[in-house]
Image (cartoon, rainbow, N blue to C red; front, side, top):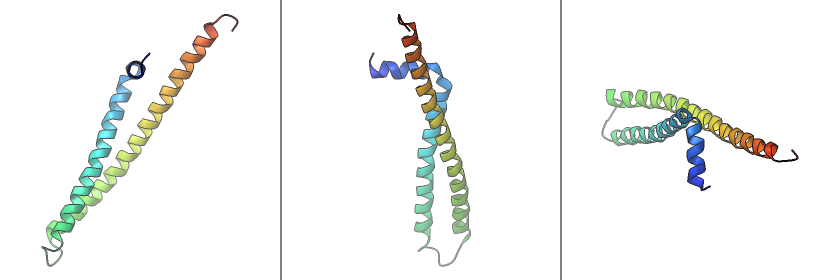
Length: 106
């Protein structure tokens, strides 16, 4: 059996879990991107504004909100990835044990 065939069978076992893992990974990557864009805008505005304007305060609030959301995304992504990994190991171990127990003399 080829690797892609094995992965496809494992993904078919619980497709919603892999869809969730894919969404969480995408959200994690986009949260990093959003955080970087907001920080870039913040530092681009600093030399242009002589004092703390509404725009800078709004960017700081948005940055705080994105940071809080990012922590939640990281936690969710870690939990789904861990659960997915344990599920894969459990499925493979169960199938191997079932195969061993079906053999003669087991």
